[in-house]
Image (cartoon, rainbow, N blue to C red; front, side):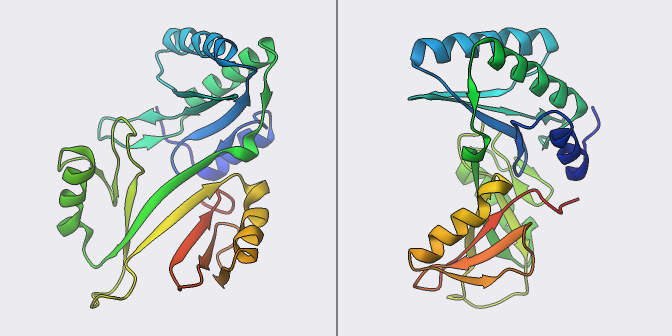
Length: 222
């Protein structure tokens, strides 16, 4: 299946998938459930529908919620959203309605790790082996664990430099409608906005010690 561009995905969300949000790789949402039995019953219905479609969404059941993420893994290990994923999302939304569940997409979040490096081909195999157990789980400039046990790690190209200049930062992917609120909360807690020129795609914050983090959304991305 062909990978969809971010703007194609956002258009689909606007056109009828309003309870889903595009994160770094997947399309995701969260549903409120009354308890474990209700959540498990909904997950079973999703699993049946996904199996019939030949797809493997990620499902997570917690206290009062079910998280769902849909994406397609290609032969090279890349994780993308395709038209088939959009169709599965529509099916899942219909199942949620049948089960009387309320979507709270503003609560979805994905954490990515980002590491500055002048040449990711040198360091990527090390981090892939450390995080996933195999050196070959590198897709482009990103280490992707096939089973999503750990956050993805992508390598941001930079000039060669000496430590202790900060080389690590977090990318916190949020639903667009909650990004400003989250940034404001972080600033109220002692942080500062370092650079918002890339907003709403990304906004760079720093904690009181100067450690940087990016708040990311899918808006304005290709």
